[in-house]
Length: 135
Image (cartoon, rainbow, N blue to C red):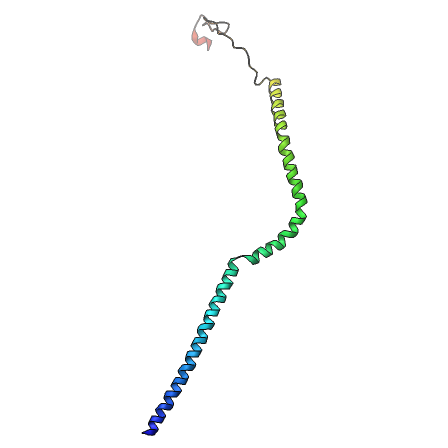
């Protein structure tokens, strides 16, 4: 009987040792899982911030802007000058168009002619004879 009790205590001690080992393994796995989740979350936040895309864009934009800034300044100056010269050019264009129209006889205002009562030179009179022979 003593042998069976010692045997049971041995197995019970072995079970306690293995359960402590399992508990420490589960604790370590839980800590590793939390660390992995935090690392994944940090990576997702890093990806969502677009900092890498911004860095790449700045690597392309910086050399281009240094080269194009002079030509863009010239472009805006040309746009400003074109805008300032458009107003007198538009006035000259309308004036010359009106002069050409008047030379061609378009747009003139003739004095109103009063129609005489009782007809005039354009009055049509029926000729004597058969109407069918006039057609």
